[in-house]
Image 1 (cartoon, rainbow, N blue to C red):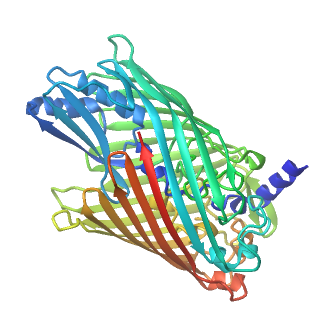
Image 2 (spheres, rainbow, N blue to C red; image 1 turned 45 degrees about the horizontal axis):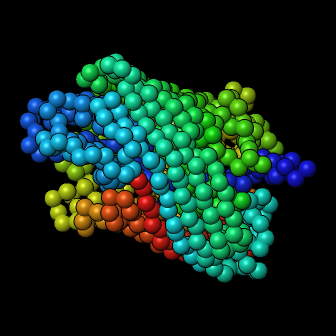
Image 3 (spheres, helix red, strand yellow; image 1 turned 30 degrees about the horizontal axis):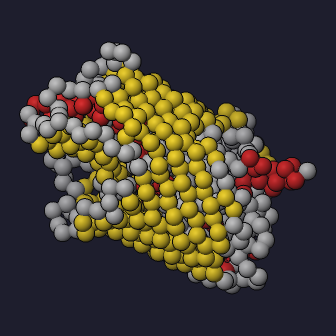
Length: 558
């Protein structure tokens, strides 16, 4: 009976049940290589012939827009180490600004040293490593839910009383931690160009104190990664195939439609609402084909949802990308809802679910140092229709940015405008765009506090971002978010905001510090203040307060 009640609540208010459950906490994004798309590949050679360095970059098989997993990176490094003349090599990903990463390959002529922890074995045929990741964080939110938790968490089955304290306002202060351990490896099959790879890990998260949903201490032990894959590629890696199946991560482009953070539940009985340690799907079948500058990817995704509120959503689709240069590429995507109980609602009631939903999108990113050094442009547009009812919904964004790489602290400034259409109740057609599993702190959470109240749908937003790099290991980001509603009808969002009195939703100022303390330690600090707009103030009878948050987190990865 309790399971049926929880499920009914989740279906009636799908966004409410997921508030904070998959909003892209800052934690795991710093540990998983595939969370940041590649911007470029660099080779640093010491005592190595330039021709060999060029050959090493070729056999890596990495290109702009890729999101390689750690095991794929291990396979790429093994190919480089097998080249005659390479004494030793190592490969790492570094932040490259604007939510991107750079793959840095270091080559040396001197012989490779014996493998050290976490490498268990390394040879020309592959390698095996221990996975030992984790994080710990302290969090303090002032006036969570804009000082009105009863308004914005009413009926939410993830909330357990006492949640944030009696009455309104108050402060939520708590700590979270998690450890993930397991093993991963890759090995070439004989003398062929085929390789097998895989990983298996377990995760133990814990939370203690009064967070924004509940106040009990809780801990779990979960299987996180459990996948296997097959790689094949030509000697020059111009053509390759990558197939993988199991519990693994997946993000489409920058997470505008599908993010590995937006599809996971890290709330309620599952500890880790802000660290967001869970990033894998319950099952993901992925296939990627690279062919002379073209990359075709197919995916089948079953998200990692909280079981009593399982929506039964299954998404499948494909993406086709063309790399014109190493800094200029475009792609198209198609996503299909194969099964789901997540409901679409109008003032007249439920009209359907995600099953039968089709999403088509086109994405472009351009940056050319030879034409306009430091300038980059990026944009995406998506349209949705449905098999079972008349639907036409749109979403898209455009980003203009500039990086002054030659100035101290390498400042970059960007402006992004985005739109997710809302439903006009005066028409027979349904126009509210379903943002699917959009998410990620770096890109599509769009305000670490406002993002917990506002779904992406029915939203017109601006983001102004200033990024500074005082050192190679320190990154400072200042974000300003401005949000308005497309339609006053907002059914399908948080029930407290189902009908808006104003299109002014709110604004947020956010400061993020990312510091690579060492090769294995990473600090993340967040300070933010969210200012409620007229729509949120009216939903609380004028009693909405500013929502502030302070977060300090330390992560390790081996």
